[in-house]
Image (cartoon, rainbow, N blue to C red; front, top):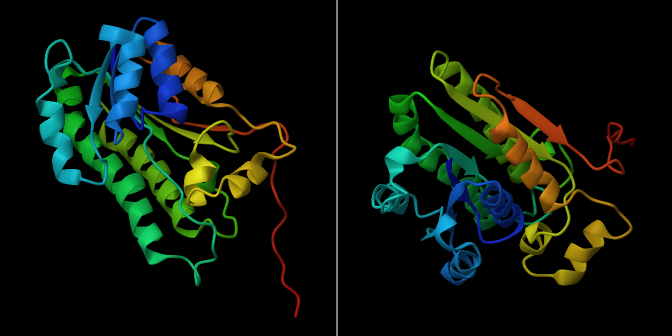
Length: 250
């Protein structure tokens, strides 16, 4: 299977690429940081093709995919893992940086739909394909400071479900993976704009999910028989649960 993985240079993306390659698949890894992609290619050799793209540079996505060399030609792609995404800031909406909001929308929504729109015609033409979108529990459960990040992940959930509606009759699968707290990535470091102490405190005294847990989930979905579609799958560590409604008394 030939799989496109976005956000492949670190965290979920790296571990997804790793397990897929270990299980015999080829991966086209997309990320901004070319040097990171080159390191991964040196690790996985001919099974990994690095494609340096900034997912917010929307006009670059389609030409880059259409220029892929053999044996990674766009017509041969079997699956897309839309993993690239980020959260920026944890301020309440009235204090949030508008630039952060725009960047989350550009990456988590615009980048995701652009690459999906590019590959879908080939999946339909081949009458096969799998799209795995990386959502979040933030798309279902609101929390203070989640504002636009949660909004983008709610979009991803509905986009995934609506793709299933549009693709009925085609042998194309669509899954939305919705993780809860996951450690061992750059997620919180990016959210807090490089503040390592703040990032570390998110996971202090917890046993969070790991990037390998998410990678194993992706691998499992892709290993299922072609007639089986997982619509959505929500994962949380055992130590994470649900909060009561917030009631403010005056």
